[in-house]
Amino acid sequence: MEQSAVFAGAGMDAATNVIAARLIGHRIIQAGAAAMIGRRGGSLSMQPIVTTGFCSVIIPTQHAGHSAVGDVVFHRLEAVRRRYAAPMLRTAVVGASGDEVRRCHDICLSALAAVMDVACGGATFARAVRVGHAAGA
Image (tube, rainbow, N blue to C red; front, side):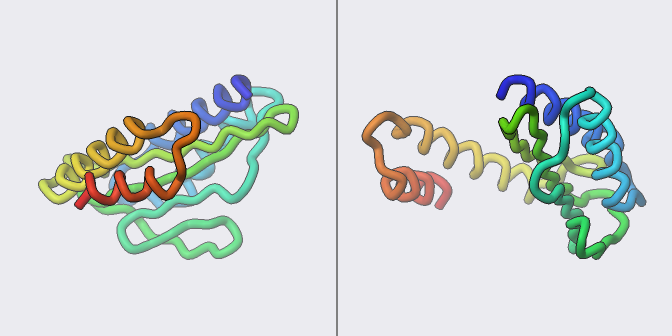
């Protein structure tokens, strides 16, 4: 699993490094996939996903648009090595992040911290959801 995470991490770094204004989402996937597969043994699993602005790129659908300054780019890649998968998700902003993006970031961090505080053996998923919702409200 560690090797899968190394491949996925390399893909995420490469994908994040190409994000720029006027870039089509396919190029983000291409950079990530090339980095993962180029590690000799990593392969893609599931569908790579890129959303930017109001457009999404999922390989079979090919609904793509260009990113613009201020867009939040969400991307998901998953690498596999010897049947062990490591999905990774990342969010980046084209250019500087605005107030709304910073507020969403703070809400997400609060919710994640609250969930991690109750995540332990014997904890239920329902409790984690309730705690996360309360912290993010």
